Image (tube, rainbow, N blue to C red; front, side):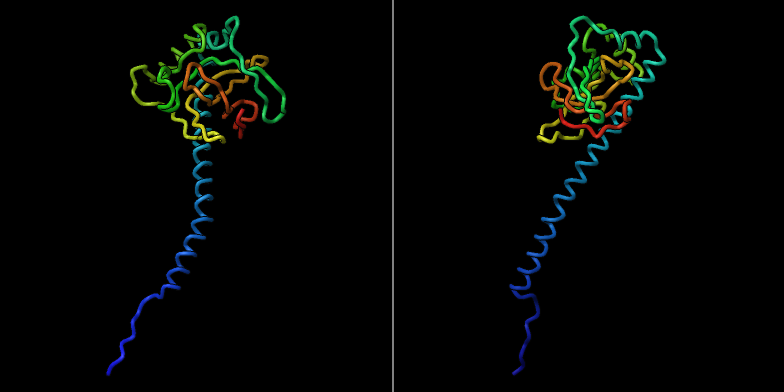
Length: 198
């Protein structure tokens, strides 16, 4: 009688292979998620750099826009912030904001002034960039998520009260009303801040 040898993997061999795959996945998945988060952050910093460049060009080229941008209204809302490099505190004055995701309240698909004094700046900025209130899509999306897991959903453009020439681009929570700038993504102080949640 002929003996037949059954070919294939034993149960033990399959369990060992599955265990090895599980260990590799446990090592690689967190690493890959970290790379994804870093790439989203880098994308947002690049977008902030574009916003900063466009606003500075506009301020330098257009005197009316310049006057409007820096027209600090009486009783303006300022935010106490800390410089990431020097550790010095300063007051951030906001001039305009723009929705960065669909989670925002939908009132700012164009650059919107914080106060009527900044309307001229926003009008010229929107015209220059081709932004229209009727647009259904968000123009510059925010991809990064805060360290607490909250999604940033609004861009903020402002300057330091004591040094108005230092224009800064922030992101933050704009789900209700004006919202709050929480993370500085770009400033002239060091060109690209790593930023910390504020």
